[in-house]
Length: 344
Image (cartoon, rainbow, N blue to C red; front, side, top):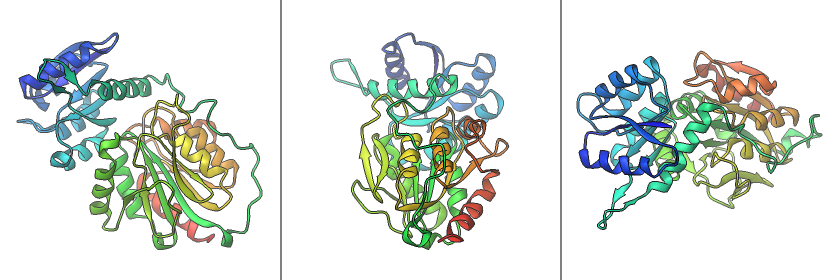
């Protein structure tokens, strides 16, 4: 596993070198002091993973991510020392195709490096996703029957739009949520692959982008129409009897929170009806869950290839026959609204 380091601070580069050295089978491919230098290096020698800083001279990390994903795409992990201070740049990078974001490891007074575990875990997820080595679901994920299940009348069930997203997800989510009509009569719940440190920032960023409240989902709360909720921990967000719960199982699931775990829980909850959407992302997480939702009577939508930053998750759903519709990003919100509000 060859990992590139992009950071304008020599001390940060050294800390990241030590972190890479702690990863089994990993080595440093090259280093760059700014985004432009990183783009040129990536064209010459595309690594398995790039650890990308945000605030740098000449070309910042967000612009570099966009350029690299266009000209020499490879997995990019945002590594930054501050969350709130770089919030807009972080979400620009995630929207452009960075897989996730994590804090920069720190050099302790005794010379050791702290915060390496999170970096290793996120790097493993990024590499597994792009390699397609992880299917996005496991035996411990609940299954639903292949045939549609009987429902209570729609009038007795809460109208919901369930959304899963990953690479490129923040921008895609903002577009879908802006186009979601009749949102006051719908509960919207989102599972986005993102580090726990950034979940509240995602909710705040989306609130500013769509000009209506988005907040993190609280364990134990009952779903309510008019709310837009985002998964907020590295446990799995699931729905049980119309309430939000966070659960550890399946422990082996590499994506935390998992879209598959979320979708499967929604598929077996008889108190809900609505539409489920699987947006841009690497890997296959959410594809099997979307198929379960379609089998249980939900309307299912996958983002199309042309508008996806990475057509991994939605593409896998299309392969499984899980999507009733495959739509460009700009059309998804309106189509989901019509399916849900029209049946409320």
